[in-house]
Amino acid sequence: MLKKARIAVLVSGGGTNLQALIDACASGVIKSGEIAAVISSKEGAYALRRAEKAGIPTAAVDRRSFSGRADFEKALAACIDGAGAQLIILAGFMCILSEEFTRRYDGRIINVHPSLIPSFCGEGFYGLHVHEKALEYGVKLSGATVHFVSEECDGGPIILQKAVPVEQGDTPETLQRRIMEQAEWKILPQAVSLFCAGKLSVNGSIVTIKE
Ligand code: GAR
Image (tube, rainbow, N blue to C red; front, side):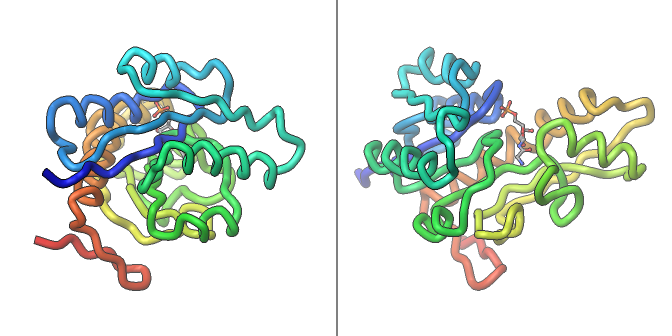
């Protein structure tokens, strides 16, 4: 049997997307990959508890304890490389990574974003803010995007997207929950499964899924 791809999942908060990945590994949706480490940019994040419960090694590399981004990223890279990770997943990871960092792991970092990129993305669009902006604008459809990470914030090649309707009376919280349930928790594990099975190829900004 082929060796499974080792995955490092980077988190900052509650970790429901991490949970979707843990469940997908357990159920066989992700067959060719295994989560080798969960690394949090915040000490005490609930995502770390989820990883511990699943028996996955964890590390906290708290952004606030580093004066600069370079030192923070150095510590992050040490954890990722120490875990022997071939793939890095940003699952609710709330730090913007430098060009140096994204180049170092070029084609090996995947992010989930809670909107249909190129709408409601880029600096300042994260977590609930994304849904606040979508509701303010009055869009009738939103959704989620899974994409490779490049030096441009939320600008890398798109792997999968799923649209989700906005409903009358939605609050940022109800919209967030619907997008997580109907889109994020499905397309993130799907994309990871495709990557680990060697089925994704990238040409410029275009991602092709091999049959
Ligand atoms: C998710 O909605 C994720 O897409 C978003 O934060 C939430 C984290 O939830 N990420 C971003 O906004 C990144 N730009 P989780 O910790 O429960 O997975």
